Image 1 (cartoon, rainbow, N blue to C red):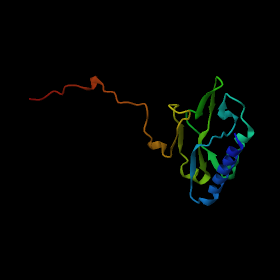
Image 2: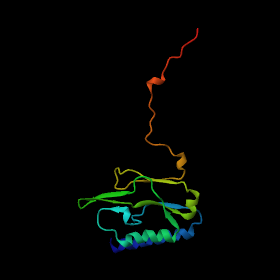
Image 3: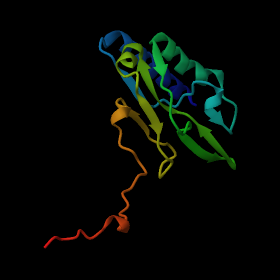
Image 4: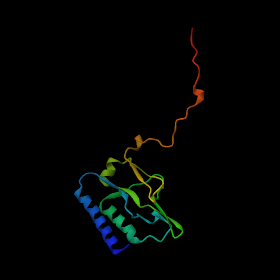
Length: 151
């Protein structure tokens, strides 16, 4: 990363830290942070530098945020680099502690890889009301029967 990119990233993280102090309502933030929480969030490629983990972890600690647990697919980014597939969790949901108290039954799922090298991240704050996917209605011919008529 060039020096200009490093400065922009530092400004981004400082801005997010300031949000903690300027927003007095519960909030969460989600999206592509382009950072990882720990080495388990990467497979393949070059080793994970400590600074790449430090920025996200510093923000989470400073802001009393919680890295939301994900159901299903862990990795949200993949790319073929130098003949090797690399998988990373770059996209995530971070809850501030007060928001997590409001939505403690949340459900986060990462979508499939389609036309992008990133998956989408879906946050459902009311998973009890979620629509079930993968279920279809199948008509059964055996349900049809002739009702006898009385004359």
